[in-house]
Image: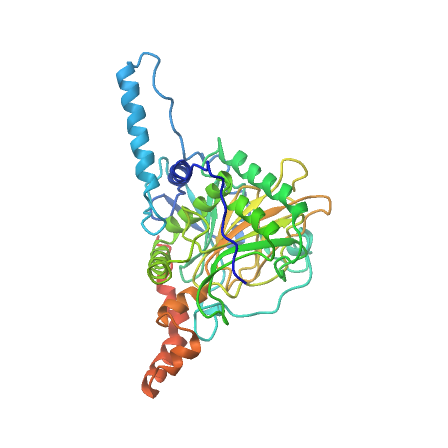
Length: 441
């Protein structure tokens, strides 16, 4: 199927949109373990108190335009400098984006989880995750946590206004909870994005995404290279109606801001991995100029809009993603009829045996290809949506295989070369551990 191009209005101001996107991305840049004071590692057994109380989550902190006595020439100079900064930011690409020091560093709460990296499993060649069976059941909070619960997982309280990182017992940072970057404008931005999905959901038609993750509607878009594809391509929708809905969301300023926050958070929290994503993007752009990308300010190749109205994922892994790559998930709810994050919508990480509160507007970066995850059920009269970004492991495989399909790659090798490549495939996943940010006391 040939994907439908994105059609924008003739008067669409793309330069202004780019400037706003990167201005927001810089202002939304989260704290990271590299530039913020880290707390002591909290054992999972004691990490049950609320994280973030008393922490100032404001990151944008832009001051007033100056005192009333500022001279006209000074005011004009200030506006000129602001315009120059906006123009410079508009020239930044996701591939060249670099972390900016936060305007006000925030405390990063660190929680130790009782798992080691070698307990997590990827595919045999290490390019994608391990394909596990999908779950079928939704679970309540009472099923998951508490002494008398079915699973006895640990509940981590999180208000979405602070940052939290989950660290394996061998020191690898494998889940990042990203707090609101700007207390003043971010909640409204996320709520408007939730309203967009809420308004779009009833208008979806025809064949939707084959969703094994739960009983809710979803559409995905972006560049992919799954097994069976002859080369990377832009995934389109089944009909022009749904394509237009996706196009409208991709060009929405609030959605673009969500995308930029996830990408910037990935860069701050996992800089080595981010640089590999950037290199892969440049290789793909150089070889396949026909490809176009979802957002001007995001390194991720693909997006899924989960329209709900009850977005409650059952247990699964997104095994097609790069196993050491992170997936960004932002929880959303509409202005009317949202969900109570204290009672439902939590992120369940089965391999880590934790249940994390997941407020609307908050973002979690996780290893979705290797960590089994799902959501705590919400009430049947509540509505919950989510916005996710990720990159297919197939895009990295395509570049590393010399821009060839698997069968063509293996057919081109000698017997000795085949043996060497198979040895590399066996160790690719464990070799990738070196890419992760580590916790250093």
